[in-house]
Length: 467
Picture (cartoon, helix red, strand yellow):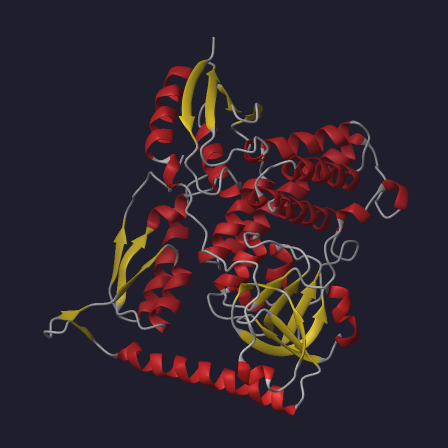
């Protein structure tokens, strides 16, 4: 008879990809079968699969059970009971609040200029100008066997081999991108790595290939299957995770068949306001390679999306880079102004088309004010911090990877107060080797240029589960 752990989900955003990956990682350290049961929805899922966990539609306040049976069930029951009680509630945090759907009134000084404006909902404030550039959305629904745009199967053995190799390459590519990422980018890539290595996804893909489908047909079928699971959720946050599944599945198509057969959107070569029906996180990151370092992107000046809620991973990335972003945009209405200069105003929820000289001067002045403000703040980067009574205070940064050290010192840090080395061990199947750790620490020391770095050897637990 299975051992049962009963608990209440306390995660503010429910069980989505990031907390699900923590549960998956811990459960996979045991040989016993572990099943997650959401008592509200009566949905059950393999606790060793992030996709299966997300499919249970577990929201904050839901009563849940873990059913454990197998050779190490006692050990698993004890460890999981403790973890769910002490650490699971800290695996996620509330998202930044976004303004309501109600549109802000336009500034009087802008209204007096009689600009031609299209309104939309702000999810990231700020203003910018650029060339209105359409970006092709990822539409797996257009890829069907009947359409003739999917490769045919070459035999079960050949397709299985190609699928296994493709999954390995996707994981390696994500791991490579993680080496030069931080913050929100790193968290989202970690979620994608969890999806790419997910047990349920792999089983569904292999079942399709074994039934005679080509890799491409199996990938599209699997993407549709899991997206339909997410669409049934009563949480808009979980519904928006379907875009991540399509993203990972499209990466798999590219690894198996090449980008020539399944091309990604083109790279930007000039400052642009990008518009699309929807944009996956990977598409967003590929638009401008400068996204892969912790500085502002060079060419993505604004995003206009028809779809994409306030909690989509693409919007979270845009917000982390302070890119003005509007959603619920009437893309068709903007078609006449493609490849022309427009302005996005995330402060007012407005898209300004055909800007005359006076409107252009208005936003140029806005940009100058913001630049001046940043320049004023820059003066303090090299100033010593002291209390009102003159006591010297050292300002140091916390980092989790060497790539963060350069940004920290560039923004005035006098040292690294905490190098969280445990983060280098998380969400991977094996520990980093000595040479990998050595290179990471050397890179951080090079950025420090003689300034101090305090290294914490380990802090495991809470939101940092390590197998």
